[in-house]
Image (cartoon, rainbow, N blue to C red; front, side, top):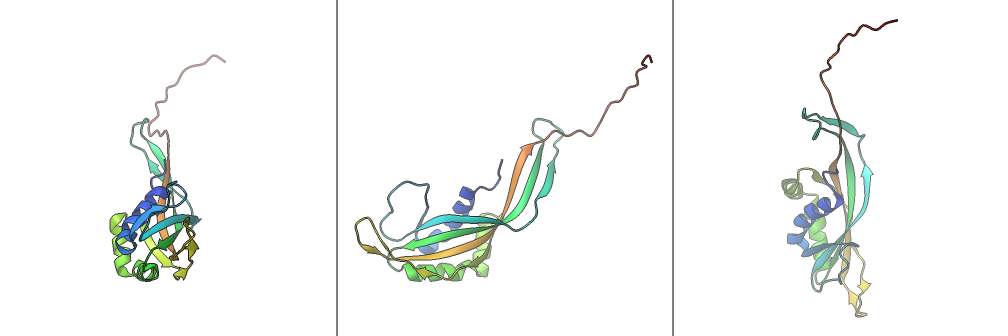
Length: 169
């Protein structure tokens, strides 16, 4: 139904971020303890509409697989929490590379439906972990442009057979 889901967007972004910031997990869904060492947690924040919805007709000539698609462009804001030693340096590296030509080309090569827009400034947001120890954490919000299409089955016809029949009045 949806051709590019939130999980797909997170996976694309994770493939881009992992070489820069360490292993990546999605927040709220994984239900596992936070890992040790250098890692990132990605949290989808909001998906703001940037365009009007356009119709895409997909008439295959076969009623069983013909469809109607509705596509739009959305701004996906994803919070990246960067943990572990050197989190500040890794956050600055991510912020810098994300808005560069390299970042654009790399993300588009992973999935052409996603493109970087802008990044917030990295902020320090240390936290107390389960062992009651301060843990180094930096937070960056990345904004991306996502092209999303929702499709539903749709019947089409391009021919009609018309016949005349005499009726008594």
